[in-house]
Amino acid sequence: MRTVAVIPARYGSTRFPGKPLAPILGRPMIRWVWERAARARGLDRLVVATDDERIAREVKRFGGETVMTPVDCPTGSDRVHAAVREMECDVVLNLQGDEPTLDPSALEALLALMSQDPSLPMGTLVAPIRSREEFDNPNVVKVALGEEGRCLYFSRSPVPFCREVAFEAAPLWRHVGIYAFRKESLAAFTSWPRGTLERTESLEQLRALERGVVIRAARVQWPGCAVDSPEDIQAAEAFLRAASPDD
Image (tube, rainbow, N blue to C red; front, side, top):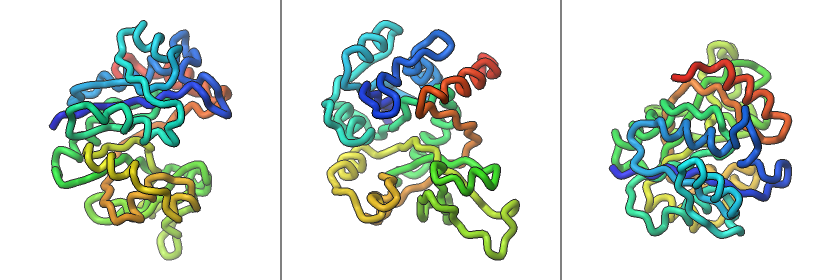
């Protein structure tokens, strides 16, 4: 199983322009993501897909590989597809360029999921929900899981509703926005128009569920420290200071 991991990184961001180059403990964020992803076992290739020469120069400076992609890619998945279109690979990992605390072992769990079931078109990650505040937060995407980790639905609303089971005892999961695709599944996914549910919730993974695509999730322990705005850098730095070199 030949695997390629792609970190989509665009310069233009409404809330945080130039985010991939934002310094975190003296290093640009894209370098943190790259170096932590590179520690995952089972990857045959790791690339940064970008539309900006400044990002490409920085990645090359620290020894990473870049692929230039169009400026007008509508989503990260489209940018990933543009990057791997001419590559020989079986499985493509779509990483997040704003997760400087990325866990290499979580990527390995996702690769194991795809390896164990060669017919699985798409995989992702989920982590336990730890608080009522997290469950009620619309920025935390919840996942309803069926047997063998099959994703039944993703929502910004609190699902499943805890009617007869106490919150503390309910099987509650949050989505970790990292995906694995079979290469042909990624090509199909990016060719489909946005569906009604996707537009309603603003969650692109619902495009696959609306089309009947099976998505299964690997369960991981994920601290979650995405950098969405400049204010989030302080939390990311605190996490990285506290982490040991082997974390």
